[in-house]
Length: 232
Image 1 (spheres, one colour):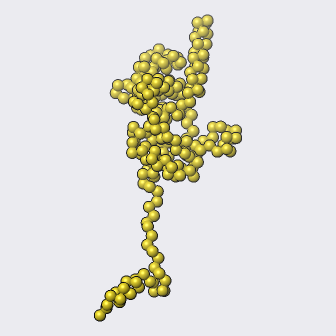
Image 2: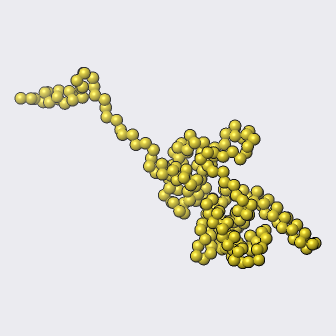
């Protein structure tokens, strides 16, 4: 009959292997990257940005777990940039000292497309950014969505681009440009009220100095063409 000492010896022997060596202690399972961090990182790599208004949970993860997201992006020479006032998180290429001395200032990371706008796309982007800045001055940064109607944007557009003489053609041309800029996350789709939302990423994608210079160049060119037409 086993007594209490026999029972204790039996329990102790369970921790000894047949070779006489102690059994290894159980280890905690490897959980890998936090699922939320992984989802936020994948979203950034897929689209380049996350908007709070559209994907609030992923945006909050990007904000609260920014350090972990940046650790995941670091091997790719990418970094997370946050604009919590406007509610947007987006990728930027990490610039090294070597990059600053390269002749090609337009270097692009293999995972980040080099997005070059046409002249007319750049014009509409400039007009949209002007409207976005005015909205923020009146309503405050990130307080409400910036909207503009096609009817409001069209006469501004025609100030710089030659009028086709057809209202429908002019509008169709502008709508086509807005649809193209939608892929750059600058505007939303045109809604049933013929309005678009100017999305907050435009504050970071469109450089105000270069856009202002573009508008000035187009204005000068337009004035010169008008003078030549009148002279002829």
